[in-house]
Image (cartoon, rainbow, N blue to C red; front, side, top):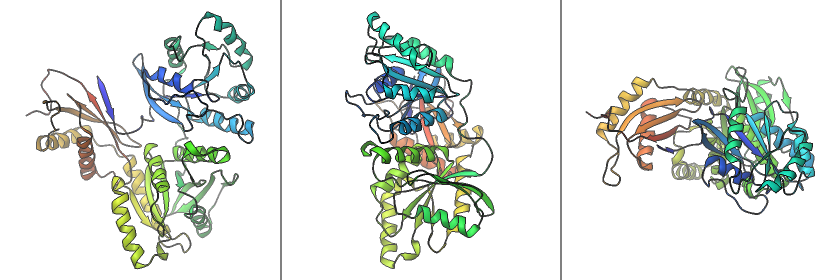
Length: 452
């Protein structure tokens, strides 16, 4: 059986975070977990700067494994930086795997990480990596001093002990993944965008005009700020985040951790408002923020700020830019506002509600398959290698965001998967939410359910 996917792994799976300082072999271990070379591996510190999620399968159980950037021992405020990453891992993972280079031994960075992880209510598995033979076992034994229990010896490079480690990881997993946030309370909105597009101005407008801020937690200039505001007669929790100035892979120091916290704010939210400056050209940075939201599987509202400042020429130019640069997210909800004057701000509530409703929509299986059957009969999948695949069955596996699984007798071309997505949107809506379509290929001689 093979599988295709158009999106990130489902959030319904348990999450295993692989953490540690730079160049201890985290990405190599992730590749062992996956059984393939997916994570980038290079013998220099800091290759993995972003957190990247992959779907893994072991002994019939699926889970998400997260490859994290190394804890930088030379970053400003080393202990604080280590604590932020370790604490984030504790909040989002079901199992934490701390990787230590046994050939070097426990460094000050490892000790600092262990101090934080010892306070975790998540299971922590200590991995002594680079134990290539029995002689290396004595070095691994020294890692008991980290206070995280027995160090488990592996060689991620050569695969030694990898299978037994995976068994240990599965044993540590809870029956069901943890909820990222408690159910109930105000809907969570991440307010994101590049610097100077008016995010803080918009949040201040919402808070000041409604006079209903009931809690406000301010951090440094790079920390998110949470505020509960009343909008459209409903309370919402808005998170104002630091502007994303550059790619996480090229950011450093404080900016690197600011980028991680911005990404964390998106993942902790249910819907993201991406604020764009209507009087400026849509940039690569804008596109990158939008991609972050989509890859996190969050509902999406595009808010074009400073709309009242546009002249007629800029209006026409912006519409052309949207047609050209935003065609891939034509489904995104769009609202034109002015944070300065308050114009259009009240309309945000209806766009947020609509996007969240789409995000949580579930199509009944019978209705879904009746629609797909008719669609496939009119436009069957194109042949590949002289043989046309047949779609047997479709089910909606999840919501938040909607995730569909197509059971087929063969590979479906990317163009046909885009066709399916477009038709699903035309039939069932899904305005304001990404949807994920994965294809499970199952060769069978049984009569196809959709053949007439």
